[in-house]
Image 1 (cartoon, protein in one colour):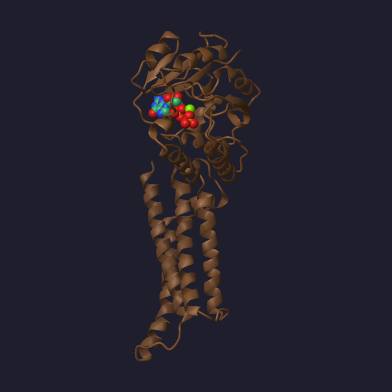
Image 2 (cartoon, protein in one colour):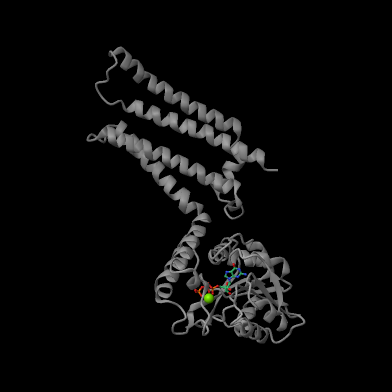
Length: 379
Ligand SMILES: Nc1nc2c(ncn2[C@@H]2O[C@H](COP(=O)(O)OP(=O)(O)OP(=O)(O)O)[C@@H](O)[C@H]2O)c(=O)[nH]1
Ligand SMILES: [Mg+2]
């Protein structure tokens, strides 16, 4: 049996163009108004709603809270098994819908349109977006999540309703674009790309970015990068955390073995700072993976090990042991200083190692506490 299709179109004061867009949508849906649906998510104040209803579209009125939020609002009102997403501005051509739904029939779950591999009308995309913003942010996302998309900002994208529900969109604004692609990757959905035509704004219509001023696309890029980093805890926490930790341990060890003779004190301080920053960063990364939404997507060995083996008693034992060991090491130094009439003639590397251990110990104690606070707060 043929799948039912819903085309979801967020709309913010698009009365100049929405009529044509809805007519094209029905063509893309084979004019089957019984099984299919065109759903306009309208947050505007102009005549878009009236035009949409007169052309047989369903209209959901929602407050103006951003493009991502408009899509989130639409989800309970989608009747189709397949969902087509796109703008109300006539820059995408919904007559191309069958090229996408064909892919879903073949078993794909999430299909991105791509303007980069398709056709872009002259003047449809500013050069800055076409040759800088879009390729750069697409490249970063692909690198961070090991994906191979060519146009992550393409507004035309098609997926199964199940895939959309699994993606569980959270972004309120333009960054929804990246979030969907990232989660399609993290959830290992079967993905594909379809080249599309991309048209310039019709006469008289001004894109919302242009209505909001020159800063708007830069801000869109900034929040898209933010969402990429929020879903990349390995890159943000673990890689820098472990590098700092290893570098710090190596420097402190090299200083204490006498392998570093010049600026020994400064190197020891550097090592101390790196160890403590690195350890803290890894701990924050673990907390993000254990107790946030990231837990759904990141079930690696270290996280599983900590969630199974780490508990309050063990954390406290390790933490207090490190602190005690550190205090013992530092008390030798203290004693020496006391005996020597409150002067020290050279730098004590053991004193520095002692401080490192005390710091790591206290960090472990507070990490243990925060983990228990999160555990007890969860039902
Ligand atoms: N419901 C709703 N729709 C919105 C909102 N903000 C933008 N839209 C719609 O989202 C679609 C995309 O907006 P555009 O202004 O074309 O932005 P864009 O296509 O991402 O950016 P350009 O590349 O400059 O065209 C349009 O159909 C808008 O009407 C909102 O807060 N609520
Ligand atoms: Mg547009």
